[in-house]
Length: 360
Image (cartoon, rainbow, N blue to C red; front, side):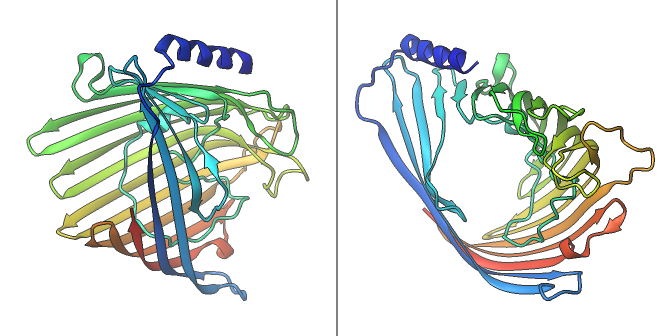
């Protein structure tokens, strides 16, 4: 598969005309966030309450040029990405003259390129969930993409329909078999978005699916998830909601699994909702997310008495645009996690954040 993708990429470059009228154009972007984060967990331990500085920075470089054929070729790399200082190169994007595009290498899932952009509170507040909790939050919380792949995206107003766009992606690798992890081996994904305006309100609908397999011969559940959602914008007010559903396999960490064994996860469901109101330089956002799932040792049959893992959070934030590129944020989140019906106090609690972000 690797050889076929390499051959296809080479042929595409020859067909498009791999000559350029001039040097590649480079641009830079980045930000620095400086703030304070406080976490108060529900457990009784030495780490129940913490307050620390929160400093995160990013710096990225984008490269692009237009070929003689009119097709734009672009890529980028991160010199620093918030908490990571390692250089992270991206893949290649070809943008064609009709507005459609093709991402090669680390292309991602088309399902999540078209999902409904449900408002979510900003800020760095949060309480980290336990790895044994299979209830992944967010309608895009489950993925399984191999870096060797592509994503094709249609032009805007595709097929002559105003507001319609869609895409398709595939990935494939040759991952070695293992019993303790469930790394993605291949996946197929599709997504669609449609926007329509009635009066002063614009409604955008988004939906997508992901199907995939992993490199663990013991797992009995393949990756199979879908999401659907809607967002409505009326002037300064935005409201949205979405849901995701499906099953997947995951790395070891489940307390019900044998030592070194992966897990199967079924009946995963996630919902999220949010609203945003803009008043001058102030933006208020409130959001809610909830997820449930059942996990069990890979390759076994789920017990009829298996209870759900659950994760639930409510968040609010207030952003103040101090100046162009400068935003101060105050955020608050309350999190409640449970493992098979038993509350996980060490990963439940509240958190607040206040900080300023400078972007260029």
